[in-house]
Length: 191
Image 1 (cartoon, rainbow, N blue to C red):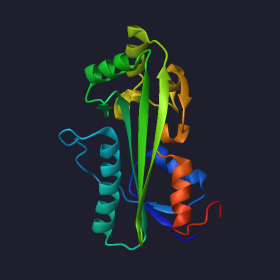
Image 2 (tube, helix red, strand yellow):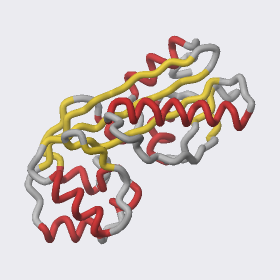
Image 3 (cartoon, rainbow, N blue to C red):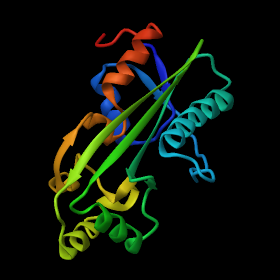
Image 4 (cartoon, rainbow, N blue to C red):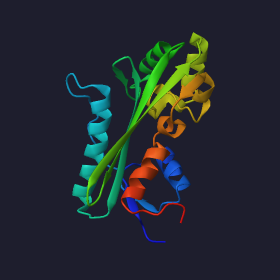
């Protein structure tokens, strides 16, 4: 099967989700500074990063193939929670999420003959967490490279009381929106 798109991400979770759509792809991750701009709102932030990742991939490869990029962030109020820098950072994030509802914004950017974007916003409610649960979870290693310091598809899923929206968007690639963008660009799914 010939390669249909380039995935501008090294995330194993995004690869697993894209595999569900039966799309053939090649992985070409790009490394960008993911620091939010001064006064940048969360929605603008995830849209900008997804767009910059796809643009950087196209520029680096000098390709005319379709390039798919994504960015997922955990948002509490107007605070963008990225990946934890260390144990203290992860504990602080999880403590703030405990017993509260937060949002997960997942933006996708597809570049080809035209550039298209979509965003999934999911409400995630955490149950109350004890300090010991948070510490024990940290020592599993799972929070290390996850936005908001948790993985809904892993052990962190036991903290989630409910979600309203896209489970796959929380994992890192909203399948509904991704399938729509790929179909509009002529990619046949499930082939």
